[in-house]
Length: 475
Image (tube, rainbow, N blue to C red; front, side, top):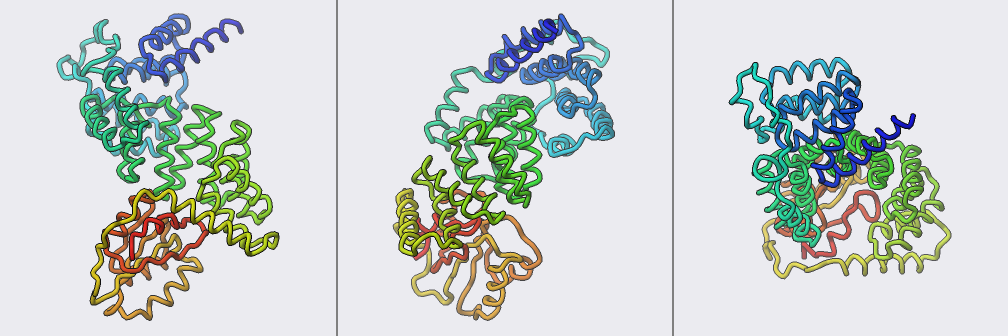
């Protein structure tokens, strides 16, 4: 038992070092474990991952094979092995391994990434073509390169990229991340930083591919899996978001962000009791986690437990007094309560308005719309242009509009569509989704369309974008 515990402790120490970027020391410990326990599956797998990160996929293959032989039911072992085969230029062997893995139940988004070869920019092992098929790797092939063009960038360049992001200089962080990923396409942190920089600019769809690559290249990074889940959620791909969050939690069971975002996703999937359980787990880990109180309120609200939901929103406001989201949810819940005088509700609404207005950095100095147009251009902002009470009323209204005098632009705030969406879409001259865009980016999009009148169809209901109106993107 003591020997097993010692190996376990050593493995955890190596993983911690690996995550922190101290690859040399992590490699030393992995190899020490394998000297004592040659078939240790996790040590073999993690060492293989480390060698792939140093752009030597061929040298990693024996370690991935050893891990799989010991535990052929572990999905990540299959993914890492197939990925390394692709990078080593052994496409046919990779296809065979993929088929074998699928026969054992291998599935999910990461599997499809590999199956469709969605990482064409990642090159094969630089030395693979120079060796004959029968040649054995030399001793030097297992030596992990630490810096330079063959492995990953130096600490100075990596720190500069992180510093730019942390200072809010996201455009510059994006530019540096693009340079780094071009030179070091197997450097997972570079893809992770690129995805984060794009997401911070409201470019959600563009951030998906870098985040996917980061999740594959950093198989032990729970945060990379969570970041990918966040993007899937914003794009309305809820099942994929749930795959991603649960993967992150397998790697790091106490990751509060992954639990919280999983709880939010489960609300959208209608699994309210599961969502409530996730939120309670977050609050066990971190009692002052603002978003967990917010999501708990939503889960309780959807179950009709309005008094409890209101308490959650007020607790959230104690933690973050200037939160528009918490005020908006509180205002929605207060509509169904007789506990408050209307003047109190009005004051809460005004407080919300002041907070939202204060967050606006600028209002547009000039208008894009024509002052005397032939047709009035009207924009409709809603998350419910579908089978929903808003959608039903809207459909009956816009059928009566004289399209020679009024042209409509839809600004949907949610990705969900259905048969009503299909019926109603032809009545709009443009369909410009806002989901995935931050408030500033959404306001700029609306302003660029030359809208004369902008209408909100959501109030404080789900998927509203009321803060966008504070930017005054239309007259």
